Length: 116
Image (cartoon, rainbow, N blue to C red; front, side):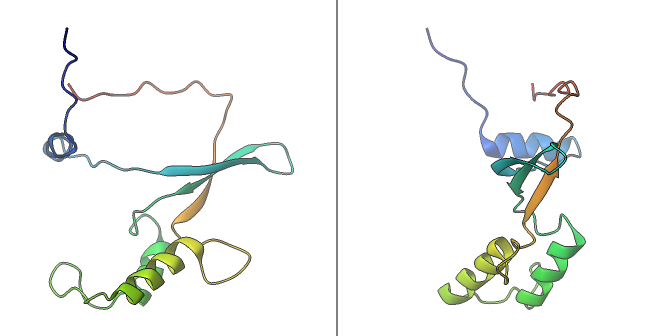
């Protein structure tokens, strides 16, 4: 007996694009509780265009238009961008790609639409 073949990422991307939607991934790094007992998750969202703060930080770090005139990255420049966008530049907060997500844990989980 053989298992059905898993769809490739390219295949999913093509079908998602055809349907007018985009794939989006968030990596949850930790879970915690606020002072009031509400649960939150710390997540890494690599989409630099997701928030005003992340777009501003990206534009300050990366010169040129990524579509027409991308900046040439050296290994040192790449490391600096990744560190600042994820770890931040202070000792009290993370960079703009790491965000706190508050979730209502009492709500029913929504149905997941799957590609067919």
